[in-house]
Length: 430
Ligand code: 4AD
Ligand code: MG
Image 1: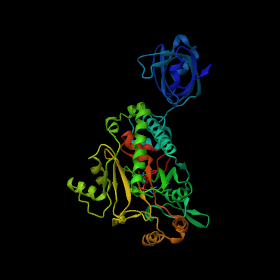
Image 2 (image 1 turned 180 degrees about the vertical axis):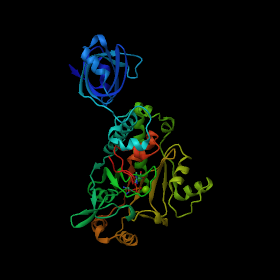
Image 3 (image 1 turned 45 degrees about the vertical axis):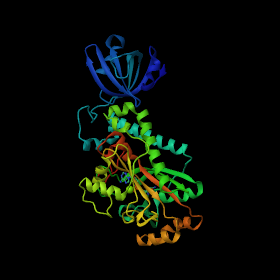
Image 4 (image 1 turned 30 degrees about the vertical axis):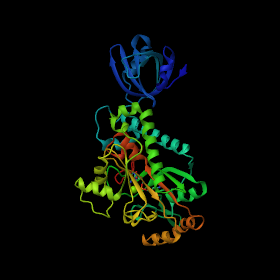
């Protein structure tokens, strides 16, 4: 008998097949059991009619607990009333393991409880839909990079130095030295860009974020492209191209997931190229008009980002922040030495910063001075300084936070639902 997965069921109409999965839900009435079977690709209703199976099989179905693992055989029948369009008319059921007392019932549970049960919660419809969207976001990213001639280069996780400031470093023992979990693959991508031209990494990064906001994880994933012979304007082109591609990809391929999540598609469908670009100074003027008390020289806070994004249908690129609020590696603006040639992209609907990047300081002496001014240990950056010693060129890149993008696309309140096993200040289990 043919083993089939549920999302391929349409091509098996009228045939006998075997499905393998878990019992999602069950309803019974005298002569009938309705088993909702899920197999990871979908959910199908399996109808067990007393007269069509052995008495043992029918009796066994009486006591089957939620999430029991099953092999079910039967005939695929068209059924216009089911969301799938098909159901299975059952001839045989084999129970691999009879589960009892599954802790997540179809009734409502609080997020705190569900997060403790994350290893099981992944099976439920909502998390399942979110993680399918995440998988497509990652696929879309790789697709865009492949088409753009970028070579994937993996960055290390253990590092000897800070990339994004020393206040959020996770320190760990590394034999007789100290190591830090990477905050960003950027510095390594700069080295790789000088070897390959256009490169990117895509992997986990770590920040000891003490903030318990809905936008921060301690372990999150970033895609970080880096390009040799590239300045800020082109960097912004690539960032908006990537984000636009991801949005279109998800709109095209994740319709049923977004429906499960009850995501309003209208705001996503309004995203258009080119994205608006405004300077920090313009952003500040807009914010003041909207009632923010932000002063020149301050970084935009989460609330400022939200306020600003409400003025736009597409993500907005804010460039040239004051250098004093940005990382040491940013190149200064030759037009105004107070500014850095950097860019943040703010998602619509109040989702805040999804991309951060910019042009890198490419002059040896200037970079050395910045490392000193930021109080960073020179020895740890000796290799990085070499990149300015041997064939330095203008170069730029950015990091796009996968979880922030998934949260926006799925319309979720908190980024912790966008990663299979979230890590926050308050969560390390499971
Ligand atoms: O703006 P960030 O800190 O930039 C960098 O790390 C650069 N070195 C990237 C580069 O130029 N190659 O982080 C980039 C993005 C943010 O825009 C945000 O989307 C995400 O990473 N991000 C976080 N996502 C979840 N939790 C956190 N704690 C995050 N911190 C940053
Ligand atoms: Mg940033």
